[in-house]
Image (cartoon, rainbow, N blue to C red):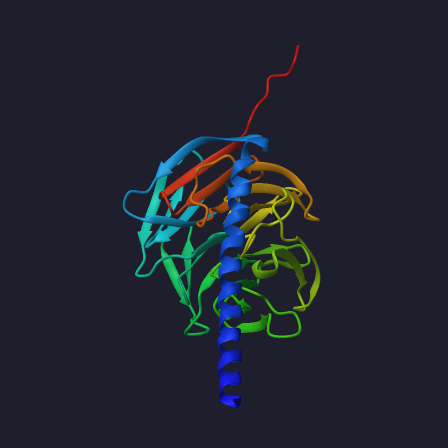
Length: 309
């Protein structure tokens, strides 16, 4: 009798678990369909003004230098372009590039578990790391004396000096990062860092002492929320706030520094829902987005409306 009861309860637990998986899988899909059907209600104030196709590599990451040069990293290359998308130089890497950023006269490009340092002419001058053999580096934020590295696999942010020594690790204390998939972005702020805690669908502000001080964001389909799982998948600084890119519902939008929705850059698109676009901006006047799905760099500019006379 006891064995029969044990078998019954074991089967019941398995059935409940399977039911939950099915429910959890179907529910986001229903939301996506609902959101897709309402895209015509979105107003977009930006338009695509240029595209650049990468025939021999998949672009995965984009950054803009202070003088307007566009840096694109992919499988397995790093390329630099001027504002007119004229190629200035390209270098090829042994491993795929997962993130790029710039600071002063240096370009920083990550592979899965190391960091490449390049000068403005594209020469690799140094390689730092690895800091963990099973790392998946997804984002870099460089400053005057330190570099922040987001490791999605270990759910941690390493703060290193310019020589590669780890000074601090964020996320291994009371405030943990929930990172269900390899989307985990970080940017510098005036007083520390802003980090995407994607499993919680929010952006968190951390101070230089490694303490989480505030956050904003919530799960939902509304314009000022982050849909589904693992969002915002990418984000970048923008004058007055941030630009964010989501997966599940593939949309790019502007939010202010408190998370309030400002406007959509792209919502009525045919991008693959499960593959978000990495994003960067040139002083808020131009937005660059790389799409690994179709191997293109998209250039967005604000729509200029004629003033009524």
